[in-house]
Image: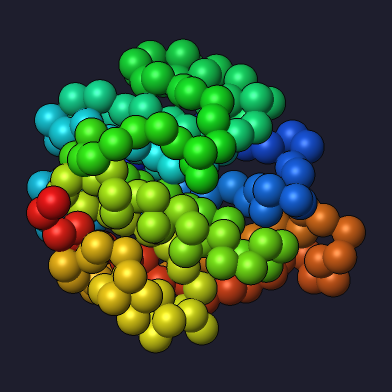
Length: 208
């Protein structure tokens, strides 16, 4: 599947109708999501025929992008039941198979590498400091091949240092810098769009 086709299909997905600020719910736009998964597959072969987990999947965008690119199995993990309902509708509309599970990532009972690849757009940690790093810590414990994640560019040095020193990462590489256009979802947003620079990371876990 070509990049433009992938972005077009992701653009048809339903997104949050009533986002929850305490969960830092922001839609992962089709521009970023398509490039994230397309790079994971075409540069590294981390999607097609792989078991892919989407951490904090929200409305399912990243996981369904993996399914469109031929993932063997996709599981989306999300704490919010309303988001999971939308994700299931999105999967049905695209005629894709994916499992969506309601759970708290921080209480995930999986032990050892049980999926090939984790993809995620974690909470950036503006409401709960370090939330993005908490997600990364768990992801690197359960992925055998790679973790793809978005983090604010301003945290680049901290993310790399912590992943390599504390989180079992063998390598931590910024693949590209992207502009994350956040729509004006919440009352405290003063502008119609909030422009944040984010890094697309690829982490490779150490073999356990």
